[in-house]
Every structure is written in structure tokens, then in C-alpha cells.
Image (cartoon, rainbow, N blue to C red):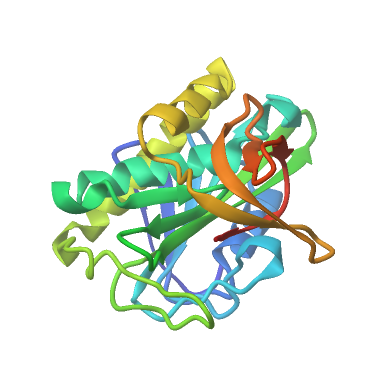
Length: 262
């Protein structure tokens, strides 16, 4: 593996391989697990900079050098794929839980997880994106290998077309805490994943509904062909689908669509 700067273990036992620059931590993690044995509890590929960072639905994840936290956690399980349908949400909840530990009480209530994978700071009418999650699952022999990509803006605001962004620095998190936060996110993602495998998605659906972690306001659901349906994000189904309460009063399950705040 070229361009690696260091390799070390976190307190959780997860090994981290840190790079100065990569095209994509997701691609590098996929390459690693296809060529090497993945040791428990998992492996993190991290980069200070990504030249072709990946977002959901093939979008680019803008990754300025040193301004963000960019990493992919690789995990392995014999659990069937159908039982892992809520993985993106679980990984996002893990990141949300970690981040709010480092935020002041007057700000943490405004950090929300927008189904299925966006971390937004919503204080008033101008939601700002703080980060996001990207997950991939592939089969290898009798096991499924999972990649959980995480991107968090640490410093400054990334410039995105038609979207406001924010950073942990802007939200009052001291830069001296960034490494502790990284370790906590990884630990949470490993632990939340273990809980998903052992107990299913039910508790996470309840957590979304009752803890205030999930955004449950007005949204527009945009399908692959560009058609949109307006309503309100009301809850999560037990399989991870979003329950949309439409403006006509009908409840629809959303499994794969682009979600925009209305």
C-alpha cells in the first residue's frame, strides 16, 4: 500500500491505516479486504485528503486537505444481507451519538440525522450539512464484508452548490478534541453494528423516534426518474425504511430515494 503515513491501534482494538492522500478511502478499503484477511474487530482506512471522495448515488464527496475527517471502517459478519438493511442509519446514529458528546448543550439538540445518511445542523430555516455516511456490502465466501464510509467537516465550510455546510469548528468543538472524536465514532460504529447483528434494527427505530436523533420534518422524496412526493418524515419501519406521511394523509414506506428538506 503506497502513501501510508502510519498504522496504529485505537482503544477499541480497531487498526487504523492513515494516508496523506487517497482517491477514496472506500476504494482503498475495498482493495485491502480483497487482498488481506480482515481481523476482528475491524480495520479503518483514513486519509487527510481525498481526490475522488465518494458520496451517495455516485456523487462526489468534497474532501479538502486537512479540513475534514475522512475514513472507511471495514467489518465482517456471517449475518445475511437482509438483516443489515438499516446499516447506513445505524452507522449515522453512531456518528451522531459521538459528535453530540463533544457539542455544547445549547447546540447538540439541533444536530439531526436525515434519512438515511446525512448529518445536518438545523437551527431555524437554513439546515447546514456537517457530514454523511456511505455504506457498501459485498460477499466473500460465507461472509459479508461491510464498508462504512464517514465524512465529517472539521474546519471551515465546504463550498457546495445549492447547499449550506457547517463544520465542527463552527459549532464550537475544539480542534484538540478531533482525534478523540474520531476514536469515539469508530468505537460507536463497531458497537452499534454488533447490536444490529445481535438484536436487529428495532431498538434503532425506537431511538430515532424517541431520542430526537432523526429529522422528522417536511421533506420531498425524489425518485430516480425525477418525480417528487411531498410529506413529512414521521418514523422508521423495523427494516430501516422511512415512513413518509404524505400531504394527502397516506403513509408510504421509502426504501431508496433522494430526500430533500421541504
